[in-house]
Amino acid sequence: MDINNYDELIDKAYEKIPDNVKKLSRFEIPKVEIRIEAKNTYITNFNKIINTLIRDRKHFIGVFLKKVGTMGEIRGQQLFLKGIYKEQVLNRLIEQYSKTYVLCRICNKPDTNIQREGKKNYLKCTACGAREEIREK
Image (cartoon, rainbow, N blue to C red; front, side, top):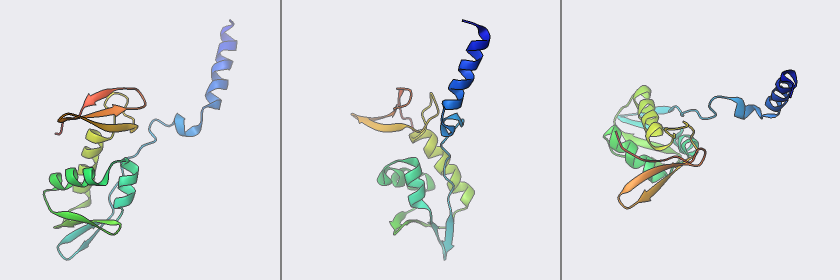
């Protein structure tokens, strides 16, 4: 095989790859949009966050409220939090949740599922096949 021919074949193959696959990461950790009312905080884009993370609402709320250290509930399309919280604090908590419960530690892709075996939870990656125990930080 001629080396020039090889380069042409590689170029042709690269051109056929879809643009969304060429990006380093198609997943972006969602940022919160908040509204503060009295002494309460509402995450107004809660459904968008849940849909982006592709996780169960109850699981996310349980972990998230525990990390925030407050009471909260879903009110319509929003997540209600008792107390006033800054966007950067809530964004950091969502980033921590994503790194622990969504992103694969091996390939860093969000194509994962949470599997429960006995008392342990595992993060199973459908992209690379990795399976790792979830250790809360």
